[in-house]
Length: 107
Image (cartoon, rainbow, N blue to C red; front, side):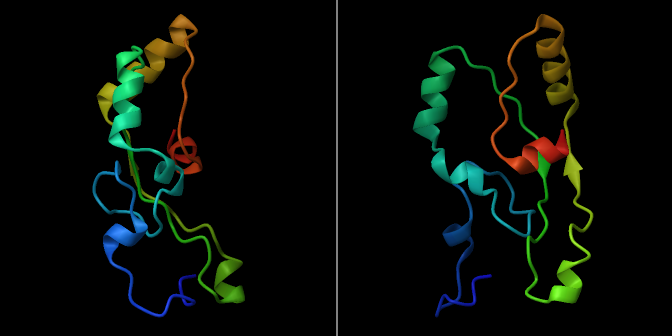
């Protein structure tokens, strides 16, 4: 999908500022709008955070036959702490806000 770009892309060209390890085939694009200052501002407003890892797969290979088989399996890891935080928030009736479809798929 980056064939229109004349030069090779470095990891930092397609990765977000707040993402952890580069395990996905495509960047977690919803995170492009976020930065550490935004997260700090939310934390000052007492917003809680939980993390997970989701290795988002490719959205298109460029081959129609292969694309018809998408999506491929995607690995994810939801830490015990995150699962506990989500469960507690649900029990309290608190809002759970996720950023990005890959997070929704993992949950």
